[in-house]
Image (cartoon, rainbow, N blue to C red; front, side, top):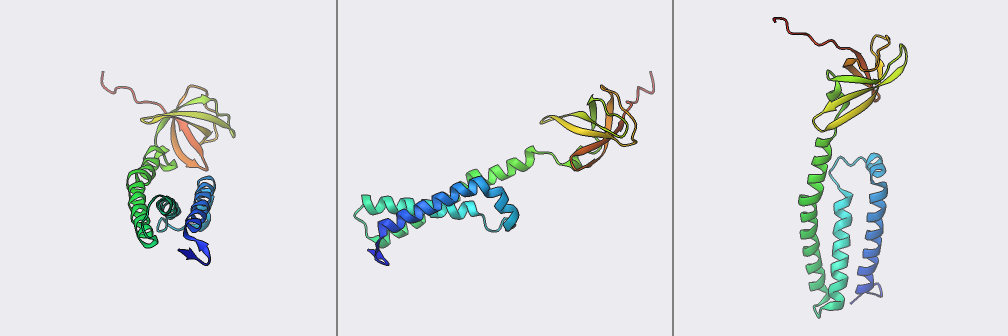
Length: 179
């Protein structure tokens, strides 16, 4: 069978090369494209590119390796690609997107936490604060909320976070009221 005078095997191979190349480009520049296109999660380019890559690869192999007719090869390659893309989405892409969200921390989640100054904070200047969390240690640039100097080793309370900088105030732990 030929499409526009081109053998079907060549068409499958061209689709495979194009979709494979676009997949590599999407891996490299996907974050940029997600910001520019802002599809809102409705259309996932990874799924579409994977579908065409799987379909063309299976179609190309079946055209050369089997005596099946071209229509049967196309139907088999579409069904197999749909199954593989569904498995890829359910077992790889969805868990990765959920894991990415759950391992990170937001600036809002840092408010009200206690940290320790590891690089003293001068008045009207910046220092560094170390915050312990269940998922690990966080080190953030810090500035005094009241524009007062805070010495290294002082426990601090995070009041607010702006543009990645935590604004802190010295924190005094309340001793036992009754001894």
